[in-house]
Amino acid sequence: MSIKVDQVLDCKGLSCPMPIVRTKKAMDQLEAGQVIEVQATDKGSLADIQGWARNTGNQYLGTKEEGDVLKHYLRKSNPGEVKEAAKFEHTIQNDELEKALAGNKEDMILLDVREPAEYEFKRIPGAVSIPLGELEDKLDTLDKNKEIHVICRTGSRSDMAAQILSEQGFERVKNVLPGMSEWTGTTEGGNQ
Amino acid sequence: MANKTAIIASNGSAFDAYKVFNIATAAASADYEVTIFFTFEGLNLIHKEGFKNLPLPAGKENLAEGFKAANVPSIPELVEMAVEMGVKIIACQMTMDVMNLKKEDFIDGIDVGGAMMFLDFAKDANMTLTF
Image (cartoon, one colour):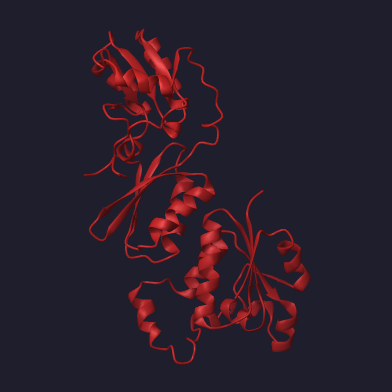
């Protein structure tokens, strides 16, 4: 199974420190928010990539193992992403969403607007994946009569998505705050 | 404040070169500021000719095969990468004088200085490593 990414970096056959050095160079060329898949055969690259992400403030999403190849997924973080205040007025807190999900889900859609790789590794069961960048092209896949809860990692992309939906005539939209970064309820995905 | 890593390289075998440059390039990849002070036999690691053929420690010559099999980059490649990533290299003036070496004997892009030049950087480094 392949996950949609913005760039694939081949570090197969390279030993330490090359996977890290190549990853840094490739990440420098990416835009904030883009996702890279780093393919490596160096077993030490798993811990190295995680440590590198922690030190540089980038987001480590997870790793898939396919035979001898480790595929590490990283998202270049946006310095303003965490701080930016949400502007969309209708919001719902994580714990309220958790209660709503325990009830009747017929009337609601949980829309996850993060990148496919983020969704792949950790998501709320039943969440529908439409990355923010594709939302405007996929509006007709969403039912306007249903209540839509929009979620991302920190509430910033979902804020933009909620505004787009609202402008396009969706009337029952709520932005989930703070989002997946502090979600303590049930999740599913490739890391477990 | 950015992380700062100060390294003293004072030995001249291939093993020493890998220890120094692997740590230095990994640190630079994580956006740490890195300065390496090359002194005594450590100068071999940046010597234009010398670094192409650094000796393995006595009795470990058989590991040459292992380096090849693990696809480890050559020392000149690692040094070039380090410099390209902004690792700062200081060659020890005093050792150069003793060994009768000139700045031109070393790779491009280095500084030549004394102990104080290194100490000035190391005084507020959050890691200082010695090899």
